[in-house]
Every structure is written in C-alpha cells, then in structure tokens.
Amino acid sequence: MPMEQRGVDTIPDEERTSGPRDLVSILLGSNLCLGVIVFGWLPPSFGLGWWASVSAIVVGTLVGTALTAPLALISLRTATNLSTSSGAQFGVRGRLVGSVVGLLLALGYTSLTVWIGGDVIVGTLGRMVGLPANGLSYGVVYGLLAAATVAGAVYGYRVLLAMSRVLAFGMTALLILGLIAYAPDFTTAALPDAGGHLLGGFWPTWLLAAVAAGLSGPIAFITLLGDYTRYISPARHTSRGVLRATWLGLIVGLLVPQLFGTFTAYAAAAALDYAGPLVDASPGWYLLPLLLAATAGSVGNAGLMLYSMGLDLDAILPRASRAAATCAVAVVATACVFVGHYASSAQDAMTSFVLLLTAIGTPWAVITLIGFVRSRGHYDAEALQVFNRRARGGIYWFRAGWNIPATVAWAAGAAVGLLAVSLPSYEGPLLSLTGGVDASFVLSGLVGGAVYLVLPQPTGALAPSPDTDPVPGAALVGEDA
Image 1: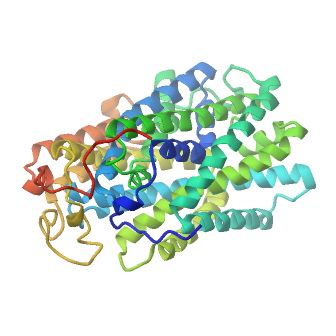
Image 2 (image 1 turned 180 degrees about the vertical axis):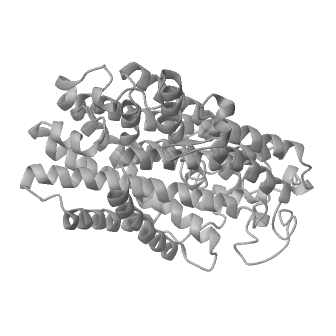
Image 3 (image 1 turned 90 degrees about the horizontal axis):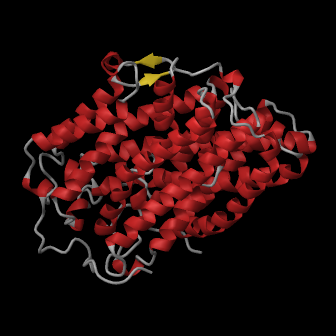
C-alpha cells in the first residue's frame, strides 16, 4: 500500500472513496485499546461504586458525543482537516488555535496510550518469561511501541483504516475473553483502597468522573474527526448518514472499552494503579491475549493520534512534509511517555491532562460549530488553503489572517475554563462560585460561545456565497454506502 502524500490540502473528490462504514470501523477499531480502557478505571479510583461509575461514564460520553459528532460534517464539506477548516471562523492564520489544541490533545493521548500499553506489556512479560520491571525494560518496550506507531502513522490514512478494520474484530474477541477471565473476582462495591470519594462528597466526585472519564473521550476527537470525514464524498454520502456513523462509532467505540476498564478495575481491585493490578489479577491463560491487546491495540490507537499530530504540525509548519512532521511529534510524544512514567502518578496525570484540555478545547469546538450553522455549511475550500500555500487574501483573510472577534471569544472561554478547573495540584478561583464542583467545560463552552455570538463578525465568517461550490461535487445527494 503506497504512502499517503496528502497533508492538509484539499482532497480531490476522486480520492474521497471512504464511506460511513469506514468511519465506524476506524472509530471502533482504534478505540479498543488500553489507552481508552484505562479511562474506565478513573471512576473506581475516585472512590465511586460500580453503578455510579457506569452512570458517570455513560452520561459523560453521551453529552460529549452530542457536542463533538456534528464537527464531522465540517470536513465532509471542506475536504480538509478540522483545524484548517476552522479558518472559516478564526481566519487562515487564526486557525492555528485549532492546530495547537489538536496537537496537544493528540500528543497527550498518544503518550498515554504508549505509557499504559507499555506498562502492561512489561508486567505481562514479567509473569510469562521473567522480564525484569526496570528502566531498561520500560525504555525498550516504549521505544518499540513508538516505532511501530510511527510506521503506521507515516504510511497514512489507508493503512490506519485497514488496521482499524482488523482491530475492530480482533480486540472485540480479546475483550470478550477478558470478561470471562476477570469475572470470578468482580465486585460492585467501592474499592476500600481508594480512600472514599476523592472530592469528599458523592456528587462532586461523580461529576468529576463524568468529565474526566466520560466527556473527555468524545472531546478528544474535536479536531480528529475531520481527518477521516475529509475522505468521504458528499456527492455520494449524505450528511445524515455520516452523522449517524459518527454517533455510532463514538458511542460504541468509547463505551465498550471504558466499561471494560471499569469492570476490570473492580475485578482486579485496582484502586491506586491500573496496569499492575490488571496483570497481577489475570489468570495464566489470559496473559497471552492480554499481551496481544496491549501491543496491537496501543499501536492502532496511538497510530491514529500520531497521524493527527502530523497533520496539525503540517498545518502549523506548511514547509514541513506530513511524514517529517509525524516523525518530529513522535519524538516529543515518546519523551512525554518517559516523563509520565517517572515523574507522575497515572491518576493525577490523566485527570489533569483531560480537564485542562477539555477546558481549552470546548470553546474552540463551540465556536467552530456556531460558525458552521451561521454559514449554513457553505465554505470556500480554496480560501481555506491560503496559509498552506504561503499566500494572502481570500474571504477568510480578515485582518492579517486572523478573525479577532473569534479569537477573543475562544481566549475568553479558555480563560474562564482554566479559572474554574479543579486539578489534583491546582484549584481555580472560580470554584467558589460553583460550590467546589468542576464545571470548567460547561463554563468555557458557554462563555466562548456567548462572546462569539455577541461580537460582530466579518461577512466571510458568516456565510460565503452559496453560489460557490465549496468542493467539487459537494451537493448533498446520493445514498449511503
């Protein structure tokens, strides 16, 4: 299979050969991995019981999907990734806001996937063949996982899609075996070693779990969905079909692995750590399937995240090729793995990461969606590519390539979110207004959206001429594949 040559340029309609089923495959197959499974461990580690943990994850995932899924329709119209598409609201240079947000999201999730997957691999090999759990072992395993991830990401979308199709079936079978393996020790009671509710009360802790474990899953895709839907042609597939596929892929692809993580957390009594107890509680016959799940699943998920990082860096540095950008961010992601392994606990690192990124990412997503509605889905695809071509002008040039009102709206929303966040090592001053409950994602989205609606917008940010076809063959006709 040839290496993908496309960066964030506009995909010609003849190359847009994917369909809604491919979107479901890639969202399902890429998420059935330990990097997503581990988020199901967070609610039990916060001191919640089984039913409270399940409800927090389900509610958070549904709310997050309602916000995130419509973003898939934007790249269906523009034939480029979402950060580049956001130039219609932020300006062709201002869309760097989306590129940086996307880069940070993908960087964090890539690092987390390699970190958790590597820890399980070392632990499993320790039980199987006596591999010592020392710095050399972790370094070699992390390095091998990172190298395999780079290979898939550099080859691009088609390789990752084929990998996701295989993983969708293979990982499902491994998780079913896992349910059988851990079922004898399963309990619905809160784990005593968690030390009670993390935030002192049930509802504050439940809301934290809903955001950190549930909502964070879909929010991770706010800049990623366009990487896949840009390869779907609106001339052959309807918006409704793509939206249904996004809902299905996100909900099933996130709930299945996360609830598996919750189930195994109780079965393994994994209150303070997940990887170690998961390996220790595994029956001998499941060690090999667990090793396969940790290896293949981690490469599949981290590969997609790294692919997205390469696109975002390519968008920030147009002179860099997608392959070079992908290799560069892989080095940074691997360095973050080592920092996380040696300098932080998994619970603190995960909680801080998802809450901070949710606080700054939600207002960007809200503003981009408001722009989509205001423009009635019409985009000038050529004007979106001005910055990538190192040119000037076009309807999205605004003021030196920036739409100042949209950028101010995002900054206001992100600032409020950061001031209202509750982290293990930091509490924002606005928490006193919310009774100590972390409502940072709600406040950041509301403030960012409200400021964007109030501030006057340039004409190009409201609606380009509908007479200009946004991409070749963009009429929304045809049947779903």
